[in-house]
Length: 174
Image (tube, rainbow, N blue to C red; front, side, top):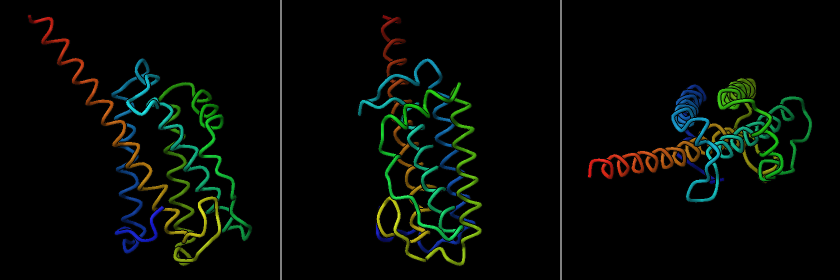
């Protein structure tokens, strides 16, 4: 996570709006890829379904951190978001891409709600799974940065699929 970003100065409402757009973009891309291609590994060896599942796990860990702070307890410190077993369990626990995306949307809303509750404390530093960060930085990373990286990776998959379709169409014309 970065120490400072352009998002540090944005009001929470604008962060929530940007988060919603990025999550919708990732969801639309995953739906475009479709159930049949969602298991295919991309150039980095990660499937689109696994990317979104990792985003879900990460957002759940961020929500758990904000929840703990709101409750006056210590934030979780273990990086379950990096555990492939946890990501795989969540990935295959969702019955469909829509189920997975529904869970992601729930997490986005929960994170936004917790951030609103903690808004007066967003600049407070906490020791959490990602080290010592402000609550705002936790929110920015998991509501903006990670969804943006996920959406960009899914867009690359779509571009690759479109290139394959174009090449196949050109080959059939010859």
